[in-house]
Image (cartoon, rainbow, N blue to C red; front, side, top):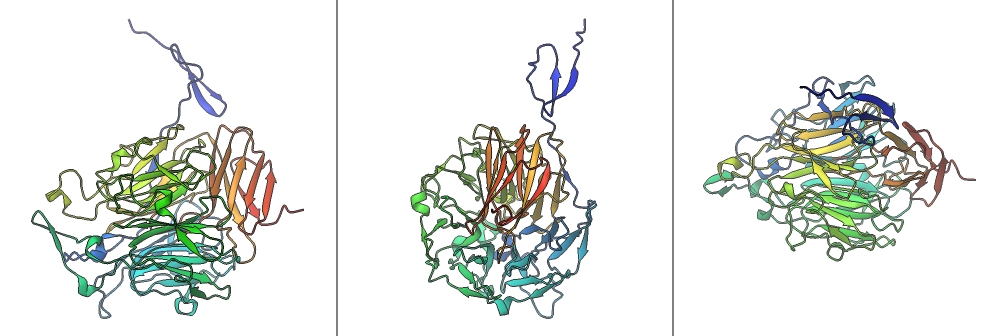
Length: 552
């Protein structure tokens, strides 16, 4: 005889709760995880091109970044996608594979716009920030060859001011990030340079008789650069004076963060095949590399890693930002928990990242995809060797991306069947492009079309977005720390310009609030030292905080 069980669905505390025989009345049924590939339907026609013609130039391997940004200040996130180009480039050749800017229509689609930022260099990364303090977001583009600084003119177009600003670099640049490291109110620029490679250095390598791309171990490193913003539209190279000239580095990504909560931004640099850097800000215009003392220069066995991407966020809600570094095949993606005493503890295995050995990982980000109040992880994957399957059966060239869900007990559960289309993924950016309260993902795939993942997960948790409006030169509040204080929980996040892998996220801060019914207070600790406090803001809204607006 069939046994009929009556299920009664009720809405209780903003969750769907099912009551049935044998089912605990407190069981919470979470909605299905849904990310929809809306690239084509939203009007994105960009295709990344890396110039490959079969010669296997080393530059073809690293791919390019991308960005979410509101370039026209209409309240909707636009997209910027970086492409490489023909290699080697020739003045007589049709170098038509430029970068592309897509404007958000506000109705769920994008239109390609010609705004003067269709750079046709051999593109690698993009950093977005308002460097001149006019409230319009500008673009800094990294290339193999000369970089570009495009100033937003506020009329829908940009002007190339690279030479006037003094921020060019003719070498092979990768990541870039902005922060006000000296506290003068103006955003400074850190630039990572990769390998000392020129066309004349080209050669191929072999694995088990198969011709492959050579790796970074075949070439010397080069020093990164620090450009100090002088507040008049120009920058000064202070790399040497700041103690940041380190020619052994092979920099891929950089991110600024006040990891020690002492009020000034410190600097993390991911290096490919050499030790990573952690430059602690001495608050006198100089830095010291404390990576070894902090435990993040190498893995826990003392091995240098092929590090690609970075992100920092407080995944365990203890008030200190933790570090995620993505790495090469047979190297774990490394999760370093910030212990709050200047030291990071490698918790990769106990946190569930042991699965990552077969993958080559790049763009990454902490984000709360379901607004449950705990930060999850997204990691982009894809190998550099297009013939890897011919000599290594443990991996593949095209790989799937991964979502790792925070289990609320300091560990992550990978969802291996969620993203099923393999790509050679590289850069990734995070932001709420449709303003529906959850975070969407943009991935730039090497030699392929990008992927715009719209978050369609029907979570009933609450959320808050915070848009910062700073004063003086730092109009977007880069470096400011925001705390969300509720009766049961406090969340914190830091506003940054440059993260992931050669990419830039939405500058608005997103907080999932779980079952929270009300917010007691939002605190914004600006890099200027001011603190704004907003009492009882509305849930499920975008809160705009102007620096100094609550000062008595």
